[in-house]
Every structure is written in C-alpha cells, then in structure tokens.
Image 1 (cartoon, one colour):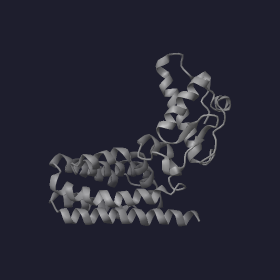
Image 2 (cartoon, one colour; image 1 turned 30 degrees about the vertical axis):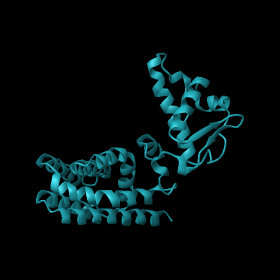
Image 3 (cartoon, helix red, strand yellow; image 1 turned 180 degrees about the vertical axis):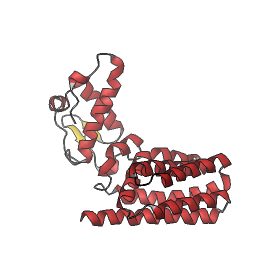
Image 4 (cartoon, one colour; image 1 turned 180 degrees about the horizontal axis):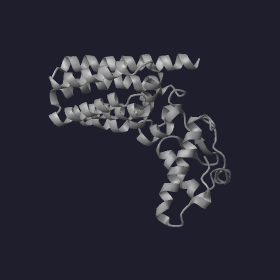
Amino acid sequence: MTVSTTEMPASRTARPRVRMSVAQSIAQDIFSGKFAEGANLPRENDLCETYGVSRTVIRETLKILQAKGLVVSRPRIGTIVCQQDEWNILDSQVLEWIGPNLGRMGLVECILEARGSIEPTAAELAAKRATMQEIADLEAAWQAMADAGEDVDAFIAADVVFHELLLKASHNRIFQQFGALMHAALNFMLSTSAHSADSLEESIGQHRELVEALRVRDAEGARRLALALIAKAKQDVNAARSEKT
C-alpha cells in the first residue's frame, strides 16, 4: 500500500492518521514476509519513496513500530525486523494489522488455545454473574445470527458481538479486556469458521443453548457448551484448511 503525498491534508492534526496508515502498511509488509525477520528494512530514503511520505513521517512511523516490538533500530546497522517472538501480538492494533496472515504465522492455533482456556471459564462465571440485561443482549446477538440467513458477513458480525458480550458478562475485567483485544482476531477466526461450515444451523443452535444455560444459571452447562463452540471452531478451521490443499 502506497500513501500518496497528494492525499495528505495540510493540517498538522492529520499527521497522526498519516503515520498510522504508513505504520500499518509497513507492518503488513512485515507480516506478509516482504520484509523478513532479522533483515534490515530499506533505507529511510527508499521507504520515503515506497510509501510516498517525508523522512519525518518515516522516522515517526518507525518509532511506532519499534514500540510494538516489530522493529529495532541499531547504530551503524539500521532498522531491523524483529523475530516473531518479540512482536507485541497482544496489541490490538498489531492483531488487526496481522489480519489474514494469522494462519501463515501460526497464530490460529494460539488463538484457539487462548479461547479454549478463557471462554469456558467466562461462560461459567457469566451463568453466575450476568445481569438480566446482559443475558438479553446475548439473546439479541444470537437472534441476529439466526436472522442473518445466507448473509455470512451479518452472521459473523453478530457472532463477534456475542462472544465479546459473553466475556463482558463474566464480570472479570481481565476477560473483558481480552474481548476488546481480540476483536480483530476473533472477527478473522469466525470468518474462517463460518465460511468453511457446510451449514450455520449447528452453530446457531449451540449459541441458543448457551444463552438458555445462562438464563437458568447453569454454570456447568454453560462451560460445557462454550467448550463445544471452541471444538466446532477448530473443526471448521481444519475443514477450511483441507479445502485449500
């Protein structure tokens, strides 16, 4: 992605948006493998030409990327792309930028493992702690999934909302932060699952059963159903991979 200087507003207030746009472009080139781990980024002048911005913008952009663990600047050597283990993948912006490269980078399994550890416990807690309004909100999200019909994008949007509401309903602030943090990754994961499923009916039914478990305060049942949702997500992701090979 090239950010043209002709698109840059003259006002200084627009500069942060320009910096973040360039930061996203360079980050995505890192995640795609264009700029390999351990390799030097091109020189500042070359980056200016590639992304169509000034040296000042490039320098500020590199500071952003360094703060996120993606690059490191070394005297007399230049700016080097960090190894994956150093990338701050718990940064919501980094996860959003990674997007479709989650699979290539081996993060799909990591996210499924994290969800498998957190969501069942969150569901169990939600069965004990959720307010009636929170359960009603979850039911509304489920209903939006059911009403989506063949509109997969609408289904995915409602599914993302459902899982974020579930974490919120646990009333555990760490789990709530996990939901906000994982928004982009969850959107991609659910997109992969939904598009690979032969039918969305099973998923809709499982979500409905989970809402009912929360309504009757069945903590054990809520945990079991959340585990079933994760298992289905794994199954659908594997099915999607099989279709591509």
